[in-house]
Length: 297
Ligand code: SF4
Image (tube, rainbow, N blue to C red; front, side, top):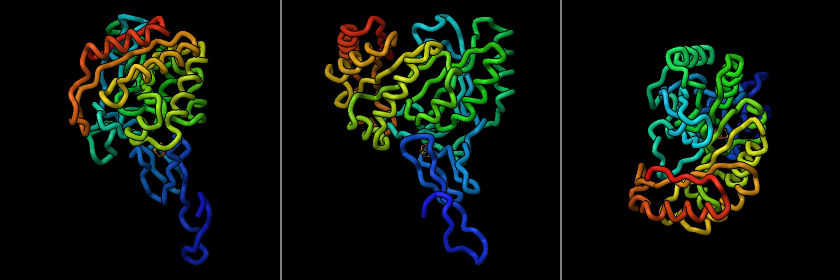
C-alpha cells in the first residue's frame, strides 16, 4: 500500500495512512504510529512529525573551537543543544547514548525555540563572547523543523546559527535551512560507500552528504568546515584523505579537520589512531587545502 492509500479497514472508515519520511535518503516507510529508523520522527495520523521537537538532552556553553570550527569567530562561544536520534549508526559514535536513543530511552526537557533564543540572549548578556546557538551532539537534521524554527528566531535576535551534522539530509531539508546557517561543520565519514555502509547508512548516503557539503560551500553566507574521523582500517588511508581534500579544494574556501579515533561503543576491536598517522594524513590533505587541522591529538 502506498502512502495515503486506503486499504481494507472498518466498513466506511478510511484505513490509517502509511507515511514516507522525505527527510533523509533512508525514506522510512512508516505504518501508523511507527517510529523512523532515527527514532526521532513518527507517523502521527498519516503525517511524519518530529517527535523530538524541542526535547533537549544536552545543553552547554561551548567554545566554537570545540564544534570544531577553527576559522569562524575564534574565541567565541555558542549555546550548544542536542536532542536524541540519528539516521546513521556509526559503531564508533561518541554520543551513542543520545544518538541511538528515542523519546523513552533518555532524559530530556522541553525547550521551545523562544525559550532557547532567550537563553542564548541571557548568556550573551552575561558574556559578550556568546555569539549564537549550535545544533549538535545528536544528528540535528532528523529534527530539522526545530533547527529551522530556532534559527529564524535567533537570526531576528541578532544571534548566529551553527550546525554540526552528518550531512545526510535530503535537498528539501537543506532548502528549509537555506540562508539560516552561519557556520557548519559537516562530518564526511570517508569517501566510499563501504565506509557509509559500516556506519549503517542507507544507500546513496555518500552522494547525499557530498551534496550537502556542496550546497553549504556554495552559500556565501555560510562558513563551512568538514571533519573526517580517521578510523584505522576504515578511513585512514592516504588515498581516502587525499581524495577528500582534492574534492574539497574544488568547492572553495573549505576548512578541513582530520581527527583521531578512539575506541567507543561498538568499535573496541582496534586501538586509537596513532597520533603520527593523524599528522601524516593532515600533511596529505595540505597538498590540496590551505586550512587543515588535526583534532583529538
Ligand atoms: S529522517 Fe528518520 S524517519 Fe526520516 S527517513 Fe531518515 S531515518 Fe527515516
